Length: 189
Image (cartoon, rainbow, N blue to C red):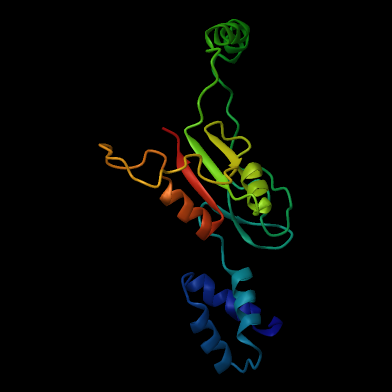
């Protein structure tokens, strides 16, 4: 690719949106006999970065300006955003202890209920551990292992007349999801 790099850079400076396939066609006409993967990689490195993007100095991958660590090689990138002084920062620091005291005093003592419950089958311990790890910081999600062994109610041989439309303890949908996926997500009533 080295003999053709200057010609490709010139084409890209004239037409920055020139496709890789068109560059491959032109380079093949100029005598290039190598593979297209090597050419596409070279073109990617020669393209000028778009506004809002920059290149990683180590691996040359394109990253957004706001990225602080390169996703490919892990190199820490210097920040490009200017740090402006905060107006009234000293007043905010002085008021912080009193606002923290008010927040502690006005915090309700009753723990918040968790509206979502993730139920994992007992035989799927890896799912249970995965969900516990994923939702460990989510205050509104509780992860539990299914502890039911059998239905709690025993039905009589003869069905009495019941005015209710359905069994209140029926969990057909949850049971179906547990059997199919190994877990179920439920909204707590």
